[in-house]
Image (cartoon, rainbow, N blue to C red; front, top):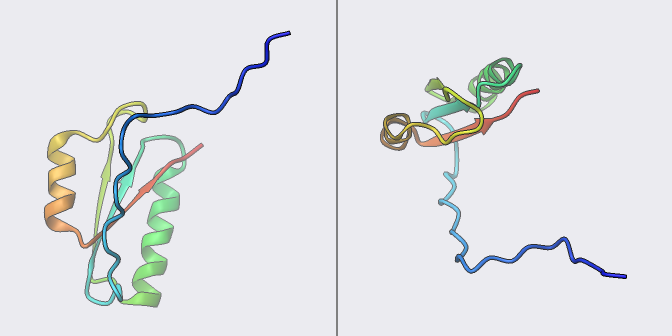
Length: 92
C-alpha cells in the first residue's frame, strides 16, 4: 500500500496583506468580477450595501475577460491607482 499526503508544499514566501482602512467613508471601492455567472450581480449588491451602510464615495466595477486568467495589467494598475479598497468576486 502506498499512502500519499495531499498537502502540498511551496518554496515561495508568503505575501503580507495590505493595510485595511479604518473606515470606508469617502473611499473608492473597486469591484473585480471573474466573469462567471452571477459574479457581477453579487458584486453590485455588495457595492450598493457598502455604499448605503458605510459611505463608500464611488464604485469602480471591472470584469476580467476570463475567469481562468489574471486580470490584465492595465485593469490591475487602474484599480491599484484609483481604488482605496478592492473586492474580487467569483460566480457560479
